Length: 576
Ligand code: ARG
Image (cartoon, rainbow, N blue to C red; front, side):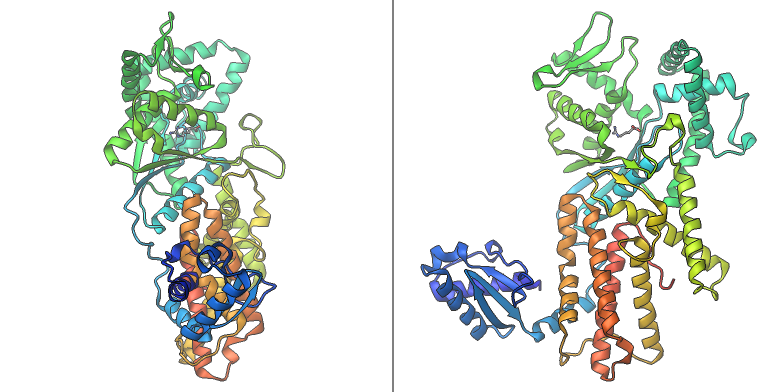
């Protein structure tokens, strides 16, 4: 049982016995005792004075004495100005450790009965994925894991914006300037080839702005279902999908369901018509359709162009409708960068105007930009960090730093390859996920791979270190097992406290949609373990029951690290 809950329960019993008060334990406040005082947890007695009808000091004395006399797990108390500091007994912590050592930390918390859809990644199909998408994918995947761990049913989805002006630009440039090049003929990954077309189009437009008209003609033809345009569109999209697939695989990203804009934009158009019929949208003389949001303090929002083609938000109306009706969602989270805050504000508002009550269950998880030490990434200036290049670079960094350490001589080339990839990706994922999603971040690959400090490799290394201790112990026939007679040191109690707080941390992080809380918890736990191990050479202990209890402690730490890092999508090697 959580120590805080245990104390709250006992305190409510004391209040009943002493003052005849019926108090719901969950309303009692029991924070950890501040470092400068003696004790483990502190009962805040001030809010209870109405019940005790005594002064703060006297109330603390009475409750404290009652607890110590009637509850063997509470070993002592002291009071400081209405704060009742309580110490828990060694037996309590040993039992807690016993519980931790048999617990499955990878199992989800009890079910909330809620079904949540998480949309992330959602690329346009006109260029390859870049560092911004990497943050998006990592956040989306780990928020999904986190919500699952907290007991929700989660559906991971993505929206592929596979139609529209952007892809027509790449298509037009390909027709004009690429002489029929294919991924095979050019030796390029498909998404990169299409990205080159997009860059080329930007040049063409600079030379002659009228090419935009051609692109719009193409878009109209696409919506009319012109066979040639559709064929080109299908071919180029298929190149891009193949390319994305490889990048997702390398990052370990999967989806339960994929939605395509070409599939939902017509439903969006139907909703636009419905809005016109309901009188919540207006048609301008030129034929374009708008939603007037000025009364809501926003602008007029374009929903259909005058040529009848659909815009970005049109499909989002249709996609949302389809998702809520297909899945009966309790909540829908969109992981999208903060440059689209306005878009999602408008989307929700328009869905409400169309009469969809579920629009209130839409939540935009808006994350900050990723910047490089050199500054902002700008596609036109070629300073975009490509996702594939980045993953490869992280692998190389991991290889270099591992080779420097020279500890892997006996590993096969395949084992080494697996390890470098785990470390490289672990570094990348951790570096990005340890930052609060809302904040913008600076990405520095060199710093991320550091085996010390708040990095993925440091936590991976800590885990590998524990595994190595457990292996050595096993060779001597020693197994993790808590024995009831051991007496735990203050550092050991600190570790047990951290372990038992893990499920709460998961809940807190899920409520905040912040994998960063899980990441930083892993760092705290790893740091505490390393300090403990530094002072306590576990394998040198002469008492076998104590040694085996310590093995149980560190084995539980390793299990928690695996569970927590799994939420972040980071693998932990057994050795490195
Ligand atoms: N494809 C869009 C972009 O690259 C992001 C889509 C976000 N999701 C959505 N449902 N609108 O900017």
